[in-house]
Each structure stands twice: as structure tokens, then as C-alpha cells.
Image (cartoon, rainbow, N blue to C red; front, side, top):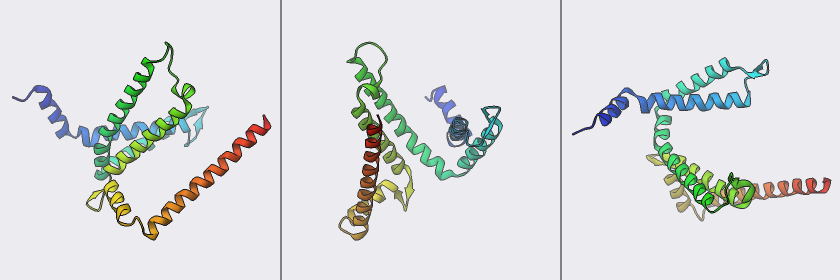
Length: 186
């Protein structure tokens, strides 16, 4: 026997809640919030232009919903992102159980661990979305890993590795120079 809740969820799915309404609200809310915070579209009397921000958010939300492939990517990726979020919250709860009472400021108390945790979460979200993007009959992550495996010793792969190392070296050199300047002035 099917429960009334399962029937209601099936009705909402048939109505388009998961494919149209929720993705629209998600994109609209994110775009609107970003525009309100950054004030990219200007200010009026020191406040962001809500009407203009809402209209841009509305149009972007409708454009995303009109593109079925983007909605499919959202529907594939978001459950995994939620799992990653739940795991990270439980990790922070676990850390909090071993600390003294008070507010947990993970960044201030454990700076290096904070950045490692941040990079791992960012990498996890990147991998989740790469796995959700369809590309040539499979997902982009599988395609990329197969390409790396097939071209591991090739010139293209070597060039990409050299480019990544060069970018990292330039970043490292320029960021360490800024730290020395700040230290010298103080």
C-alpha cells in the first residue's frame, strides 16, 4: 500500500516541483543574494536596487530552468553536496566535543587544518559537479580520468602539468613577496 505522503510527493514531482520550481527558486535566491551583497547593479540611497536585482535573478532563474541539462546537473550534484555538507557539520561537531565550552572558531584555533579542510571540501564539490556534467556519453569526470590515463606520457598531458606547476610557482613567488613587504613595514 502506498502512503499518502508518497502519493503527495509523486504529485509534486509530476507537477514539476523538483525539475522546475525548486531549481528556479534556488537559482533566483542565489543570484539575488549575490547581487544584493555585491551591489553590482548599483545603489539607490545607499541601498542595493532590489527591483533590478530581483528582475535579473528572475530572468537567470527562468533561463536555467529552460535549460534541461543544467537542471539535470543540479539534480545529480546537489544530493551529493548535501551529503558533503552533513559530513562536514558532523566533523565540526566531533571537534567541538573535545574543546572547552564556548564558540568554536576553527579557523582561528586551527588555521592549517582549516585550510586543509577547506581545500578538501572545495575539491569534493568540484569532483561532485564534474561527475554530474554529461560529456560524450559519460560524465566529465570519467572522461577526464580516461583521457589522463590514455595520454599520461603524451605531450598534451606534460604541457598541462608544466602549466599547472608554472602557475603554482608564480602564485607562490608573488604571494611570498607580499608577505615580506608586510613584515618589513610593521
